[in-house]
Length: 320
Image 1 (cartoon, rainbow, N blue to C red):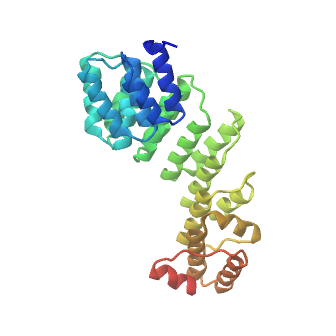
Image 2 (tube, rainbow, N blue to C red):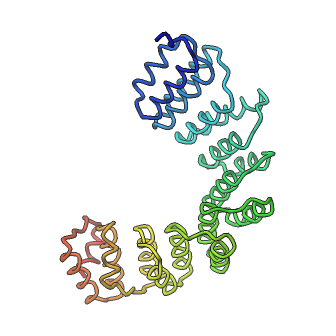
Image 3 (cartoon, rainbow, N blue to C red):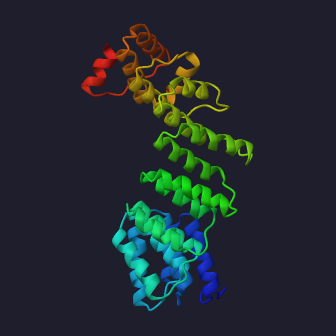
């Protein structure tokens, strides 16, 4: 129909193929474009990153430079995402230098991508420096920074930032509370964790998800409050996932506490058969609860479940 020279149609056609996962067709459209502008290159780089080819994204960026097409903010966000996926802080720092040299405005999207790259690459102080330099911050950027601080052992800073976020008039969402509850768990701040959980429900009317319950079970388990953690699991309005069960059983093993594993709870262990079997048997063996260990073995056998091979020590625990 003669539309092959229209850059808008070509860019939209490329995006359609890329979003549908047809990278071969997308690449064919891209290679046959008579004119490739910054939108074309940004779309190619973004497609490479989203489909798990960050190295191809970097190669496209270098080729983009050879064709004298200057990147915009959207291009740089995708490039920083590629650096994050590769954990290539050197390349990310080079992009940061490009932003500074060319006086590119550090808007909330670009600033978030930049500090997240530094945080994921282990440079939390640099990430915090970038975050503090941002003139505009939104709920997403604050939540990502809170999570990064918690993951790097800076839980006090994470809690402080959560308070700053509320003072800025930003209303926390489900992800924000997951981040702050995780921070409380790593610091063993039981009272604070309970307070945030209660505030989430009562003040912000957010219905707790399995992730929130998981954070609370982990927090209580780390603090040695096994019975409270056990009660929370039993009273959850949804089925606990494998992460929650492993966290709870690990805390039981560390404290030598044998949970009441009735048929209902045993049925929830099926998602992680071998790991949960070995862990639970280890708890029983440690506490010399051979009857419970045998009951567990019979229950697993009744369901046709099999344990995965373990270490000699695990096998010793299982066999009593």
